Image (cartoon, rainbow, N blue to C red; front, side, top):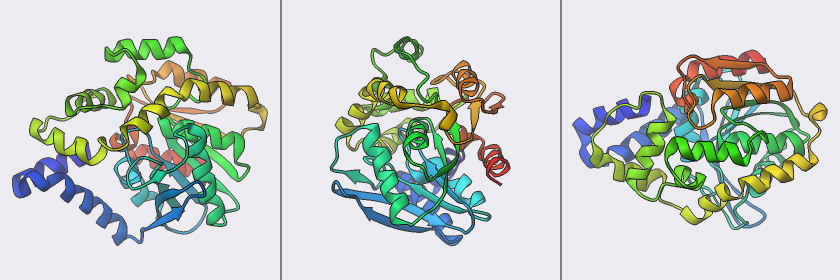
Length: 302
């Protein structure tokens, strides 16, 4: 919401290059408070791009589909870096990251584990939203350095094939990848409209620029990531021991259209974890309600 308002203002000033201008401004704001951009060479080939700043306990922020570290977390990064060491990577095939590995949740998790190892971190607190929450859940099981976890609008392993079909019906599509891997600017707008409660109006001709900037790359790989989630769910479910998972807290929007609040309540019961419900919130809560997200993280991690 904040980015779109800035975009509208920039449109009046700068014309068709507005998307690049806003992207540059958001990155510059991070650099002004000490964030530095780095690249990690992945063992399987490719690079993981990540942002890092701050001191104290480590917070690792994992974005969701259609996002990058900056577009998903910028306001949260600015706030949390005042009290913590904040690390925010672009997942593989998003933003400025790419992997030569097989597109899968396991590849994403292993890339993040490589980052943790390369930085010599003893303990990390992981925060993931939506698809990033699936990565976070995988890390909770397979990365012993995870101390605490914060899951935003992500059901972990508690989504059934029936749940996916109901989500398809809500978005009037045949397959989940039709929602999260838009092939055209028009399909992208459907995703954005379904992610926010009241997505603001902006001129339609900007859709193509946003799509080209953030959605058009690596469509085949992204589709494989979505199509593979049921198999990932089954893999994780087979090895999970709830009692051994690190402590967690959930944050959910009351009006989430992607993963309804009922999914969050079910996961909270499963994990014996508290859940913070944002009234009127939809799916993109890290953008819509960065203050609530930051405050919840701080209260939980301390």
